[in-house]
Length: 172
Image (cartoon, rainbow, N blue to C red; front, top):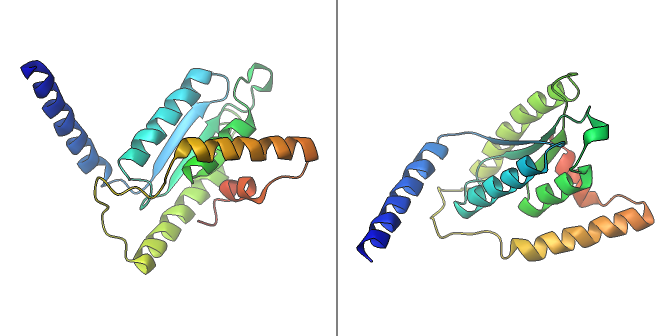
């Protein structure tokens, strides 16, 4: 019993320290490899942590799919990345660092997102959020609706505007 209590206190202390460090960051870039499903799952876990700590509300976050030049080895689809980005209300881009595809777009988008988020937060008067403040209700429901939209897009061939918006790094 005492050991569990000590572990809980240690975990709370570590989370508090991580939160203080992460609050100094201006942006979160979460990168995964499209040829490794495990990195995609780890990216999702990291995004869940950032959301649970309410850090993405006041800081831009971009989900980056890397190694898109390896199309034959691809295990994570573009739609899966877009769906995760829309679920977490963040931006999404596919790049290939090896052939320098979309790298400049990503760098320009990083600067744009930082500037846009600063202006948006200043206009909204955001303070640092309290640890219990959550701006989302249930990501599982949101994710299910995004999967449904993804299927409709696949069936009818018309891309949803929500998916297009998550790829535009020049707007919030």
